[in-house]
Image 1 (tube, protein in one colour):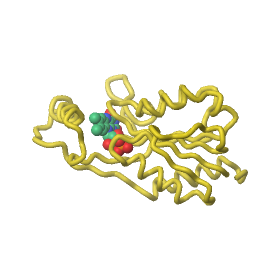
Image 2: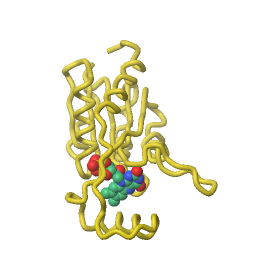
Image 3: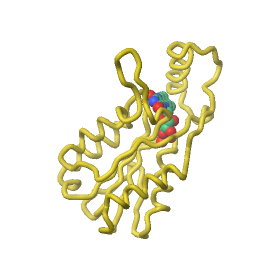
Image 4: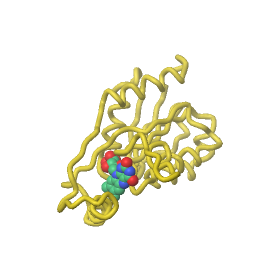
Length: 179
Ligand SMILES: Cc1cc2nc3c(=O)[nH]c(=O)nc-3n(C[C@H](O)[C@H](O)[C@H](O)COP(=O)(O)O)c2cc1C
């Protein structure tokens, strides 16, 4: 099943997860691209779209890709995923935050060609790779919102290959052996 994996990844974890997905697919004709270099979807049967989450939203570039290729994506098998730290979300003071909400803009863009499967997968934050702007945003989040008292963004990884492979196994079930 000719497959295109497109990853909108600022710091690399979504891209790494894209490669883990490719490893677990039981066929060889899989192409994987960063969204900036992604080809048209027309030649592919299965298109897997993933984006990192920043400030409570999946990477806008993957949403933009969907919006610029409506015809090429229609009638295709599609999978969508987001990569973040808060994969479950939380209910607080009458509102729901995180988890699936992050993926909403991408799922809404795919309204006319709904994915066969979608998920929210665990990523990481590595302070060594952050831009000054993102470091500032995260320091604000930790110290002003979470009321911590820290001098540096902490390294945190939840990257989890078994979780990603389980995600692929669910995709295979949804494809009902038609690959
Ligand atoms: C500026 C910034 C904002 C982030 N905001 C969130 C957030 O709102 N919720 C969350 O769960 N993770 C958040 N994260 C964590 C990222 O989703 C995580 O680092 C992800 O693995 C990034 O993917 P990438 O490495 O492909 O860029 C944020 C990370 C950065 C750098």
